[in-house]
Structure formats: structure tokens, C-alpha cells
Image (tube, rainbow, N blue to C red; front, side):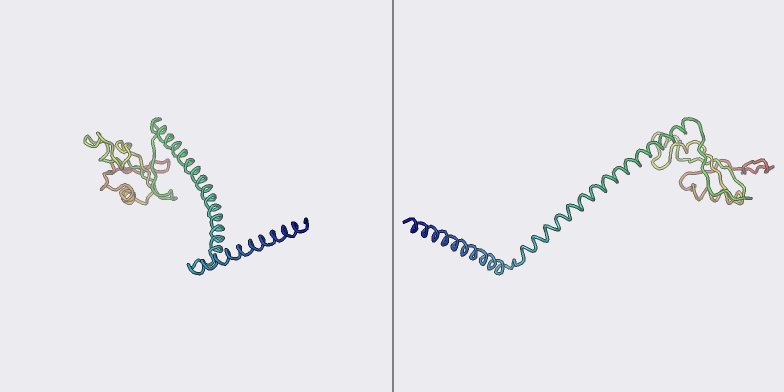
Length: 188
């Protein structure tokens, strides 16, 4: 009797395993038939490739986030340096030191001319009410410019090229720089 139960139990397990195998085979064959019918063959390969791409995109995203943080830090550093420089410029303005603008390079034997340039659009009555949008308010007062040129006419040309009269700049005074070895000063 126990032997009959054992045989029945083994037969039942064998038949259930055979049923499971047949069911699994039907499912696999059915999936492939559906894939072929609907043109979705290789979906598993596509999914695997896309999973690899997703991990690569995530790694790239992490790299870009690090780069953005570095660039953000660089921008903050530049902004901080700009504030420091603006503060230094403002301190120089308030301390009474004059800003001297240079045109050209010092060449041996070439004289230096000193010119005073002002902008007529800054500081006039109508414009004084609102600051000029493109010109610094310091141009209301004559600004000192040193020009290295062969002649006074060439120096004036260089000044007018850098500070065009069409934009309101005007040379109020110009003379050759007096040094120990220059005995005579020319004025225009």
C-alpha cells in the first residue's frame, strides 16, 4: 500500500513537472510568435542596449553636474574679484588719485604728449539729471591721457581714434610732456 502511494506521488510529481515544462515551452514559443507577428524581434537585445546606454547617460550626467559645479565656483570667483576691483576703483576715485589713461607704447626717442579729454554729454544740465547709459560719470571732469606718438598731430589723431568726437569726447588741452631733457613745451 505504501508503495502504491509512493508510486502515485512520484507519478503526480512527474506529471506536474511535465505539465510545467510543456506550459513553459508554450509560453516561450508563444512569446516568440508574438514577437515575430508584431515585428518586435530582438526586443531583449534592445532593452539590454538601452540599459547600458542609461548607465552611460547617468555617468555622463554626473560628470556634467561636477563640471557645472566647478564652473559655478569659477563664476563666483570672478564675480568676487570683480567686486574687489570695483571697490578698488571706487577707493581710488575717492582718494583723489587721478586715473591716467595710456595710448601707445613708450618708444625711445618718441615724445609723450599729455592731453586732457572730457565728454560733453556727461555733466551737462539736461543729461546730468540722469546718468549717461554708456559713459562713466567721471568723464564730466577732464581725464588725463598720455599718448606716445611721433608728433602732436599724430597724438591728437590717436586720441580721436580711441575717444571719438562723435561720441562727445573733446580734447580740452594738449602739451608735450616735460621731462628733464625736454626744454620746451608745445601747447595746442
